[in-house]
Image 1 (cartoon, rainbow, N blue to C red):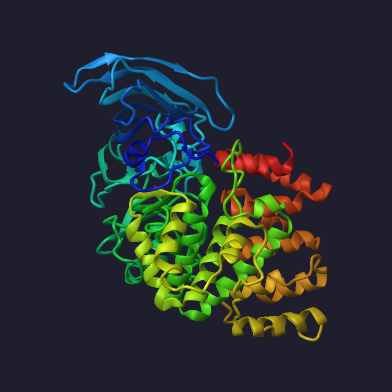
Image 2 (spheres, rainbow, N blue to C red):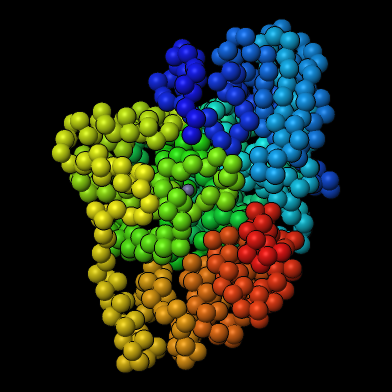
Length: 614
Ligand SMILES: [Zn+2]
């Protein structure tokens, strides 16, 4: 971490208001000198060439009056020309250099400007291998009729399709003119119009300032169903009705969150269901969450993921971590809020089961991590932020906030969190900003509840502190008793009281299976409960890992089918990891991967190839 000690107070104030600043180890940009205020995109979507071609015009705020150099982040962009735009609107050629490509961070684009130009316009094309875009052939979509393209800009992939200051410490508004083949719909993280004609000509405006990682675009054969006054679901035609049914509670979720944490500030909240190759569960692109179809279980049992992405409308999109080292501010708060939304909509029982499962799985994950990786505030200098991703910012962050909630009580803590969102709305902050706000608004007003040593332990020590609140689920007591009896051989699989189990009860049961379940145990469970081939992605991947451990090869065809068409890393990587532990399993995994690879997102390809040593 490198605080800006050299900055004059006035400069700092311009850049971040009263907030603390810190350089972003994942960006070449120098926003303390000059920062982007607005972006105007003009892009053609070319499926044949797999490229976005056009221009990006950046409106600039110069903080250092002597500065003449604008440094932008790029990766694999083909820069055609760069012009400085004067106050009179006149364009003049600017000189520029593109630095050699760093494998993680890409190439710094240095633009020399004759004066503090109010804007620059960059003509460029993305390349087919752009890490932030996935180009799919018609065969990879469900109808097979049209190609599909979508972006995933987080963590640092926006720079592979737009030259910009790719750091969450800089926020800007944007507008875009996008041309695409007719019959296809274009969506962006902006003001999508439900009734837009499919004429191939789209204009977007995003009036709320966002960081670069929230820039998003998707183009494909997309149908739409409205699910409420400010909510709609977009998906491929064969998926849209099912998706609209699954996500029909979205308006109720927004209302429940507003009641807890204040108004939703982004106008609409739509959901785009992507093809199964989407590498994540969801991505909180503002106004339109991008989601995997693997959460459409048919019984709303996995809509917690939508609660998570919706929660980001407060934590992350509204109050943003200034760089990935403070990611717990985005993901810990969001995981905390997600659980509160689940509680409000589906009851305390379900919310508690979620906590117990997540706490247990975090402890299992931590047991395999180095101490330095277990810290809430991390040092990611030189580290690819996609690699640094673990359950720590999510579940340890959420657990820390639950710890504070348990000490102060909800009567005090709920208004505190709401005040925090209001206070830092549309700002990018670091942990010290949170702590200063916490100190003034919670610690000083309610002394004696939490000691400095306890705070330090949560924020700066590995592991889970011993004072962490332990969630307890009565429904899990029943699952545990059944599980014990089954494993002891005194209860047959078919007699498990599982007829009405919800997803979390199944996860609890499967997680309690021994490291190497016997073939008899796996076979009996499968015969009685048809776990192999389940449509529930969360149950499926845990079950498949158990079958690989126990050598239950009967599940292999369905495993091949599952990891062969789903690209969500959380669901497929653990299965590849387990398969890779034996030479027979690894050979099977490599065979499946070779066939699946063209349909996988570049991020998923990278993760799987690392596991398989390819
Ligand atoms: Zn998240």
